[in-house]
Image 1 (cartoon, rainbow, N blue to C red):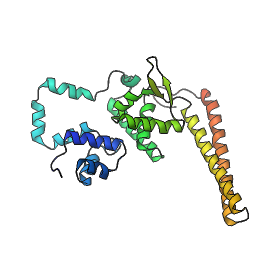
Image 2 (tube, one colour):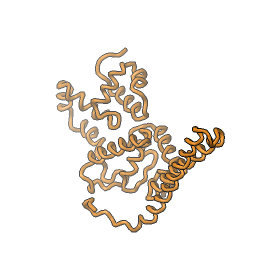
Image 3 (tube, rainbow, N blue to C red):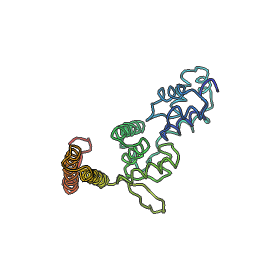
Image 4 (tube, rainbow, N blue to C red):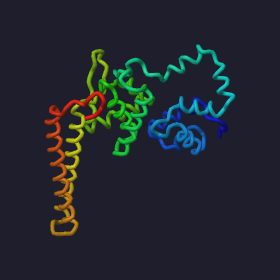
Length: 261
């Protein structure tokens, strides 16, 4: 079993594993390291929703003066590309970075959104992909842009998009260069709400099947009939509210530039 500090290669493998939703123990087995080493590394450098290898490297250098001093003595030409590596381009993914306070603030907000979406039930990678799409001005990214933005494998992005598509939260389109883009539009929440209402309706259908099987006069049958009536009401109300909100959307006042109102 290797000892000593984690290498940059090991940190990259940890980042990929965390992004793919692997357990710390599974990541640790692949590295031949104790699980505690991996969990401590992630916890010290942003946690599971914000772990990045560049942050881990800075923390490591700060704890080792010999490394920090060598970095300070490195020629400026060697250090400039690395410093620029994580800087936002002038219009990253269609976003005008001059309209926001700082690129770091945007990334922190994306992490916050992803955490909230995860608590609402979305898988981690789907939550990160959706948060990334929501915070772009165009509301659309290609697969390669998502891979670069989230720093994960193409397979992870593909799985996340498939999950979001199945719930009506994103759709696909072709841009002028015939590249496939993933898009979140004004009707995304409407489609997702209608999909949720239909899922609730299916629960009611299943409950009524149970009533027929168990008998309407039995305690179990009566319980399932109550479930069916409840979810029928919820599904109908949800679909009606979604239709009303969609119709009223065009009458809502625009949000002022200062974000109030």
